[in-house]
Image (cartoon, rainbow, N blue to C red; front, side, top):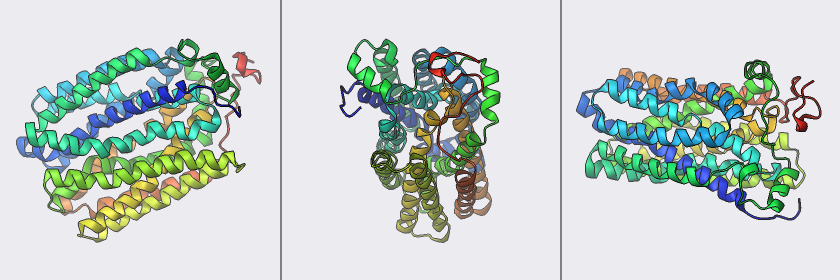
Amino acid sequence: MKKKVGNTRWGIVSLIGLGGIVNVFDRTNMSVAAGALMQEYDLTKMQMGVIFSAFAWSYAVMQIPIGLMLDRIGIKWIMRAATLLWAIATFMTAIVSGMGLIILSRLVLGAAESPMFPSASKATGYWFPIKERGLATTIFDASVRFSNVIGVPIVAWAVMQWGWRGGFFLTAILSLCYAILYWIFYRDPKEATFLSKEEHQYIIEGGAQLDEKPSSGAIRNLGFILRQRKIWGLSIGYAAYSYSFYLFITWLPGYLETQMHMSVLKSGFYTVIPWIFATIFDILIAGWLVDRLIAKGYEGTKVRKALLVAGMIMGLVVAGTAFTNNPQIAITCITISLSGLSFSAGVAWSIPSLIAPKGTVGTVSSIMNFCGNIMGICAPIITGVIAGNTGSFAFGFLVSALVLIVGILCYTFLLGRIEQISSPFISQRGIMGLTL
């Protein structure tokens, strides 16, 4: 394990990270187009909040079924179908008209994109030894942040040039290109003919999860996992983070346009600032620092839990946005908050492959993501109602800070040690997949 052999695994996670970028392009296009949509269809902030949240309705509902399917069918075919479907859904958004059909297209998009992050978490468990898991995880997790860095101004430019439909056509074409790349290049380690025997052995010896099916029925495994306090500590903590994340990803451009009186293009470039720092902090802290500290001998549980909580505490700075009308101060508060939340989320996404019983990483990841996307439904609507009724986003930012406090408590007291859960359905010789 002291000798690194080959870099195929880094090519695979880069492909996954590229998917994360394209995936979030398809989400941020709606936030950039919000002003034009509201004007064209005479929508209120509350109605726009419903449209924002529509993606998360189907995305959340599909999480647990998708997790079970990933563990049974595997990553490759689920993701091949998903990438094609989300490209079609984005094209659909560009060509339909009316609030009802736009909501329908977002529901289809949410269902299509639901496997992306559970499959990414499962794939890093297959492709990476434990000592490299932090950096590998942040490559796909940071892609969410980096997508906003490049996606918001690009989509804003497209909207200015071709109208709001042009932004959706652009992202649909990018999605289709990614679907082709994924179809050609992604394989699991056991079937990757381009993976050398030396690198495969290096991955396995380093503690990578084996590509194996759970040895018990899907419902039986799900019931056992849902009874674990560790799972709920992780999932509720991640849900608290997700409330703020979805507030930023949906309403930040609108907040800058309506409350800070910026143009679409100017708000697009201001929105980039916190996402740049979020990307950097995610990679440096959740990726490089975690792996570095553990390699130096610090206990993995203490390192990961300390950074989980520290990032959420930084997230509380979002409350400062409620007390200023100065755009520079507001962006500074949001930048500090989002930077902390980003590296906390990066650490959180490395945990399912560390704690899941053998063969159930997809299921554990999907439970975590399901809880997170329940907040994806709530945050846009609650924030839209607050802004519509008060004429300000201030109380909406305070609500997100209160939700973060709940997450801090869950990470601190419910998560416990970050170690693999021992399932009663798998023998101690679980590597052979034998049942008791």
